[in-house]
Amino acid sequence: MKKVALLFIALVLIVSQGCTSIRYYSQVTRGHLDLMSRRVPIDEVLEDPKIDEQLKLRLLKVLEARKFAVEELKLPDNGSYRSYADLERPFVLWNVFATKEFSTQATTWCYLFVGCLGYRGYYAEEKANAVAADLNAQGFDAFVGGVPAYSTLGRFDDPVVNTMLRRSDVELAGLLFHELTHQVVYRTSDSEFSESLASFVEMEGIRRWMLQLDNEERNVQYALAQAREEEFIALVTRARDRLTELYGGARPAHDMRVAKAQEFERLQLEYVELRESWGGYAGYDGWFDRDLNNAHLVSISTYNRLVPAFAQLFRDSGGDFDVFFKRSEKLSELEPEELAPIIDELLIRASE
Image (cartoon, rainbow, N blue to C red; front, side, top):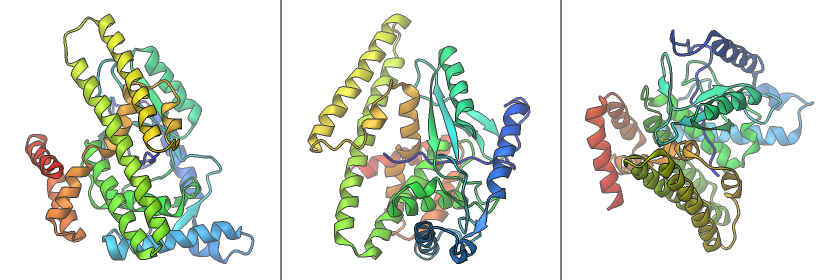
């Protein structure tokens, strides 16, 4: 399953008064400073005879993908992802996603610089789980997802972290493309816009990265994996759409809960059918092997719903990343009422 990518500022994300607690801000600051203190230039790691050779090979792949990002995708040529940090844990941090009981809209938390985001990050898994448990106790739907990558939108020279290296070479390249895109275009208080844009660049970047590798077998494997990913996203999106319609009705709360439970049961059954159509491929079993709720669906739609719109915008830009980013930047500056019809029109054209 595709990762949930992080769009989370640490030290410079000075928390707005009234939006969060001093305790939360303190853990953000401590976590960020700890991460940054662990950075070592990749060139130094490669020259260190004590460093494991496998790690060096992975970091060489990072440098290759970093060069490709600049030359082929027109992504920033700066200090980001040119150093390495070992955090000695499986994820950089853990994001909490939440919705109201009868809603498919993400609960947001607001910060300076990045605006309001549809998730909240914690450097300690137990703290994230405690926050999610508290939200569930209050009647929200919440869940926690581990985050493998780290971005401060270019405000700091972000390192490659050990959590990113758990991915394949292709997925690692995609993570770099995704996070660097946030440094080019970022729409304040619109996670769906920013994440879908980065997801599109990630996908197109990987496609081009695979072509230059000139490995036909790997290309075929990636195409198959991408087709499964699209079917998975479509499956989840349909369930979210059905629930959105359900929640918009005027049913009593008890009846709504029954219908909601039925929809999630239907989603599980539809996944079983989809898995069978894949010949038993079980790569998404982990995502479905839990008590799903609205927040799980939101975590997928935030990163993917507008990808077709950006794919269409890329085609309209003649496949030129410079033109594409300039047009995306202009869209990011529009007011919501101006942007919505443009995005809708791009989505319609993408579906034709």
